[in-house]
Image 1: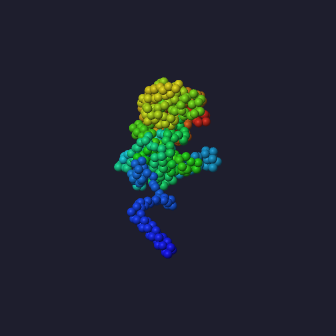
Image 2 (image 1 turned 135 degrees about the vertical axis):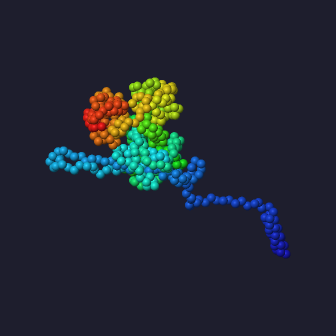
Image 3 (image 1 turned 90 degrees about the horizontal axis):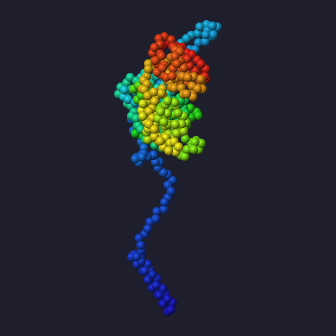
Length: 477
């Protein structure tokens, strides 16, 4: 009896518990929460670089609008047989004539629909013939309008109309890390396109050896090889921002760094060559060096900024303006400069007789000077191209006072480059210093021109070679 009552009570309790659970589950249970556990993806999509506007970069439009404006430049240099008179005395007269031409190649960029083309000076320097091949394979003989060895820029002209050309961009606005595109003809592979980023600006690599050379290269990691010289460096909008010029390499082939002349320099050079046939190069009349921590300590300069002036050219723009040796140039026309390359680039934008505002730091205080720039011959006049100078086939630059003292001369004019012409034929080379033409002393291109304009027949050139020996050359005009 007791057992049956116990089991009955137990069943009643269990039934009540079950009923309670059912009622709670139906009316009182809270909503369930779903927790997502992150799972690491084994595969990912590859993302393309994006532009400043947040769009995926696409170089195809920029390249399509530019590639027909980049040309192949081919050159020929002819050399004559060198005949040894002693050899002929023993073995008879030898055949005379010309050796097979030396061939060269590079790239160029069309700047106008009338056929003006910019390239590097080293692409065409010394050549006897220049040929331009367009992207559509048409070929033209090119005329050299002018060249500037100090910036390694040359201007050509072909007889053609309605050509596709590139517009100048603004190299000043290029940012480090910005994408750029190189177009050229490396190893004679026409219309080759590579891309990279701007690695540095205002880079000086000491590749141009002339005393008055300007090096303020755009450094990129776009692949450039022999044959790219003179080709285009464009931005992603298809605007010309530089002329590819050099590579840093121990092998002669691309190893990671390439250098382009910025269009801020190219525009001035091209405009001068078109209008005057010669570059109207303005100089401030100072020798400079980058301000380093060591130099700042040595000269008791409180802050590392600007460019240190370690010499003043007698009678130059800086001396006339009141700038002194030991000053630190801070800015040119309110544009700050912190390296020699930046200073040279800023001054190169101006012409002789232009007035610029120069801010220097002297004894810890800022001072402003107005300087009227002069040309390389020391005057403020425009220097125009001369047919006589073209016949000589040479470019010139002044001889520094220091060099005059070391050579023991009072006057002279240095040959900065030699191309096809009278000088090349008689063996005058770059670095030769003319001291006299037809026994008359020379100090400037104007002196040479005036003497030769009055000369009929033979010309005698007197001067000093690079090794310091005195030499004489003679030729007919």
